[in-house]
Length: 401
Image 1 (cartoon, rainbow, N blue to C red):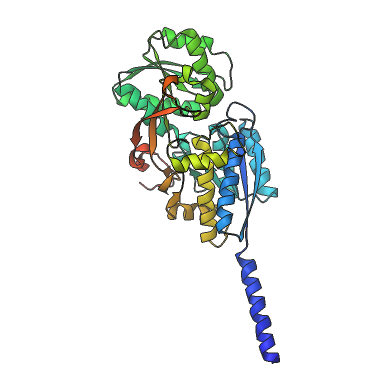
Image 2 (image 1 turned 45 degrees about the horizontal axis):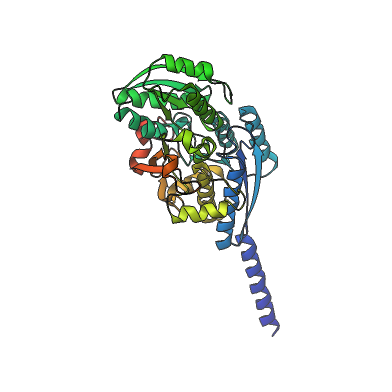
């Protein structure tokens, strides 16, 4: 009897130890622009998306405990670097996600590499993150400047917009988008007549738009985002630029921008996205849940990328038995095919680029919109294999010749 009791006690102890071993604690930092020109495309909406991802994953994995923290990088690389250094060094954060500012994202990517943590980019666009500046600790999820250029830029040139003038946000993102779109324009037989660069988060676009108007270019390419895109389109409307025969190419336009502009102002804009809230029933159902924290708002592709990126990260952590090593987790994320309700099935390449379809949209006229948030006509689907820069052309040091 004593022997049986001892064996039972040992079995109980082993079971308890096994349960404790399976317990996985994860800490994720959502760093975004919480209060300025990119707050609607990322910001609090990214935190809401992260909460949904955690809730959905832990429902099926009760032994996984996830803590979320968030911070405002203020669109300043030094502020962002300070936050992630503190998170990694003293607050046990395992992974950082979002970061809708390419300057901050490039700085964060370097810190993640130095500290051997993980960084999933959903908000930033610079294609250099999977090009010359790539590293083994960074995954670029949602979109990038090459994708935008080869979606909107190529479509505009092929429909007659063969002369361009760029209105460019003067930092890493704007420069990358201008560069990538210029290459597409020229490759497809167009010509760039000029460019002007404006400060980030400026309110007065009059002098910049006057230069664009004077250029007589058929297309004014807006290599900016968020509040800068909204303000430049509003100013262009006031200047009568579109009615004067020139077209605006919104190279990075989000559903939140269209909502802020209104269809009367935004109608006819061409744009490229990788996710749209109203594309199907699954996206609409997810949006309804997301709106529980963001009533009256519509999620952007950045928010969808935060949700999907966290799910895939947590899958990799579980597959590794909880190992938090940044390079190891990134390698596992590349090894496991991606599959989630918002982006479907996909892959992550050796350079860290997440591959999925992209979509060319046109903003509807007010008379064509049937309900709030009914913003887009789908003009074309760009298959995953064509949507992003070919692996061999990126000059990522992780990719062999």
